[in-house]
Length: 101
Image (tube, rainbow, N blue to C red; front, top):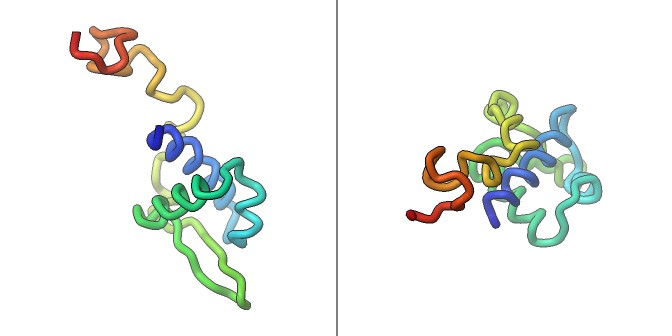
């Protein structure tokens, strides 16, 4: 559950930040993550170094870092890997969703 939340939510936040810094309040209203899900994804992006938070004129802003600009996050959206033929133990276990049999 957290994996898909990070992939989809992280992609949405990174896409919102690609044009420059954004107020956290504005980002919260533009991204389809609510409450603690938004806080969780944003904090994970900050921990990994893809996003940084700073304060300007009494407002908190976030911006994408150099690592975030160069991170190949485009793979994370669209065809989520969890539902394709390669999900689970490998291509020889199609549709078994991680079971060993």
